[in-house]
Image (cartoon, rainbow, N blue to C red; front, side):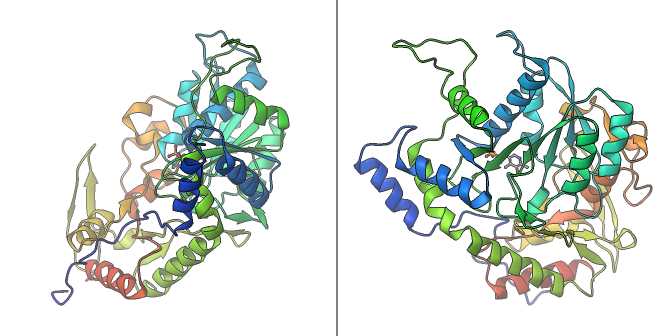
Length: 423
Ligand SMILES: *Cc1c(COP(=O)(O)O)cnc(C)c1O
């Protein structure tokens, strides 16, 4: 390892990749003075992405979180009726939500005054466990809404989850923020939910620097989202309002960046897939596995992750903001690997910390496939009793540098650095 020098240029987890066209579309918007929330770039990306993903309507918004918020609001209104101006549409109702995800998936439930019930993860795709979801409907039979995520670009067990939701008469919101371009049984993610959201945040597979989209086959829902996202203005000569509004529409400048990126989505996916394959091959003699996916699906390979086998984990403890470990020969842990990568100027990241372990959501219910997971999750020790799958993957897993501009030589070096942690 002494032979390996730190990277001169930082290796990122996942950074934006611009191709030149973005600047032309921004320039066109400025030259023609269409710089607000109307214009050709917006029209083009709404048309282009709806067609690519295979939905009838796409509404460009300021971010993926906004798309999720309006999705939750639509679902809430459909299920529980129109609220008073000072009430959220969920009005205290519970919503089942993927547990191992980014908090933007969950927060919109709170914006609308609902209570998230977190559903544990399964090992096959690192997404919502259908068994835990089934258990949750036994515990909370009144729930009518499920928020599903495709973590790191890997499709969840969609058929199983849809079947359970149909049986329990529940609607689905699909958070496809990380999975644009991924398919399940040949169909794009972002088409399976009653309401669907994607994101163009800076580190996603394609980016607008920011931005997001609401996807749907319902004309009425698309129109509603369009109206809500532009302050809920009624058709009148003055500002007339019958409903609460939001300033959530995408700018035509941002849309220019997205427009320039769309033709490169498949290239980015191919690059990310090659990175995943190279890691898989590079780590084949280590006591680790890569983030798995089902043969039914083709991920977009947004982030490559690894999971350390339980018997190859050295001791690691994590507090609310710090982590420590004890070095052991032949073993390692995410903390050691991440610290070592950082020492060599490469960026990895812990697995997204499950929501039921987050201080803000510590009192929300959490359901594992065995039932109520709250009873034992505070006493959880990695590899000890993995009934809490999310906590286990969080303890043993990490996201590897997955930047599509990383060269094969640079990636080989990352692989050597990871291997050195198991020496
Ligand atoms: C990025 C992300 C979001 C939010 O998208 P923004 O555009 O950043 O608001 C939502 N859910 C998941 C899973 C994400 O990764």
